Length: 151
Image (cartoon, rainbow, N blue to C red; front, side, top):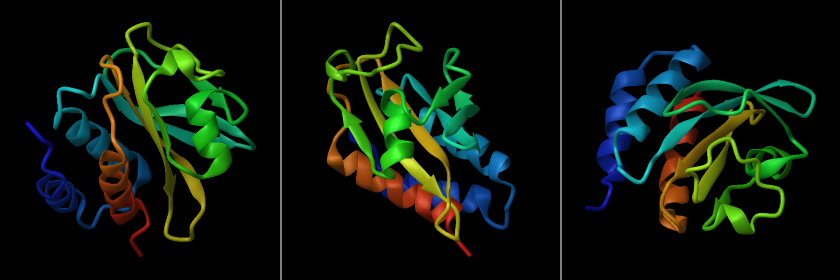
């Protein structure tokens, strides 16, 4: 079964219409994305809370790391570079932070507000190797942009 990103985007847009609170938006998006596909083992946000520092935000799944500096891990790399991080094998990512021993692959996307400021990263872990594609990254980035960067 292939994930219908168009339907997911429409559902998220309908659920979040008129909402401006970033935490409420993050909670809704994490829940909807997490339950949309069995590949998604952990789905959530790390918020920018200080200079070069991420702190866990709304998520679905087991416990996550509480804080992640921009200098460490896949989430830090996404925050530092402002670019998607598509990691087919976390064991091969030199600076991977193992928040969960079940994680085999990971997709992390930058989250920006309407002014273009980085407000966090959206992290999806899978217990399957090579679970994510460029198409997943593009579709999810579009949903994030539509949700958090709308005027």
